[in-house]
Image 1 (cartoon, rainbow, N blue to C red):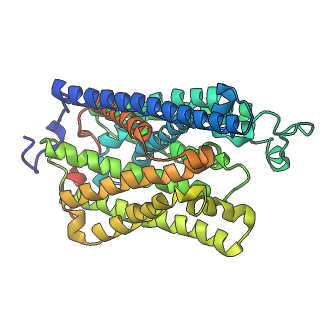
Image 2 (image 1 turned 60 degrees about the horizontal axis):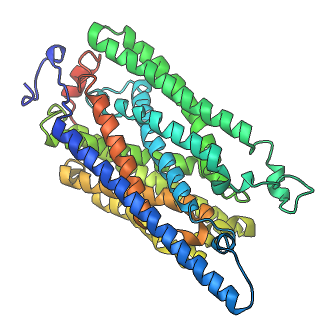
Image 3 (image 1 turned 180 degrees about the horizontal axis):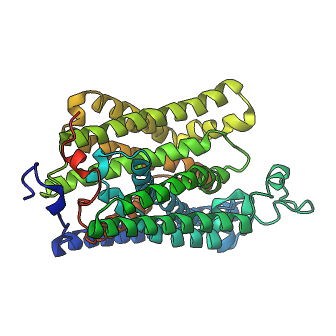
Length: 442
């Protein structure tokens, strides 16, 4: 049945099997990530120990005496900060991919789009990962928030304190721990509740048919789009922009959303292609791939537009308090972020733009896969550039901690999404527009 492109929608059902072999491979990848992370943490602590030793020796030469702890914290930096910053970075990045799954499905329902009904079960499974990133971000903020956010430092809003900062104190009505927590919990809870509701209706539609569930999903999707309009900007300000508390950009909500969105689209497309390679989803034809390719192409350009517009406005206004953001990433911290800034533009604009430009490329799986890989890696670098300079400054870099952490998150994501995909037919067999999607031709 799966081999034919023409079949009656009413009797088609295709179930993804997450085989024991598949599970094993993902678990091995997870374990490899954990091992890399542990080794990376050990090497970080050794490096810090050696640095502390050198500082202590230097002090002894000059007749000073520093205790081990004081030497380790000489300059006020704690080596574990890099672990917490990485946890935050991956938590935010993978939250984006998960929530964009729901956003993609919602947009399709809102637009009453037919073509996407054959692929919608893929993004519909993504938000399951919010159950992982929610506690991670919540606990990291509760226990190590002051490592990531300058505005959480002790005494920073107290006029009598030596650490008092007038600008941050002026923002304390919005940037304070209780209100931040309320916003974070509210966004995650609403995202998960709306997703569970939509997912329930989607599975009911498989059983009952008719259009009642379809119209219910249009309403849920409408609510989600409104929520996303508010929450995507506010979470960008909260989780990422407030790391550089003195700096702000009125375009930042759009900027982070565009980065999330194109990463989500690339993940959806890559999942569809990998499932097709395994013999599933044969009803997804080159025309559907073309549409996914167009989405990736368009939103790569949209991301570039927002990235450049934000830079350009700050560049020609030339306010010192705004230009510092780009100077820090370009010239600051011994230029350790400069290469990533250049790669960012190549991976996220030039490569997708040049690879996806022709009609044929958007219909060729190998080109789509290459493009997806560039986009996913490129936008991880994009989030790295947003988060690391403000949290770890000159202590950033790419080591086993970074590679281990992203491997752990990615393999957990693959495992949970694959597991969620087994719970429903890969084709929404009673979707009212399925017939249209099966004969999609552009």
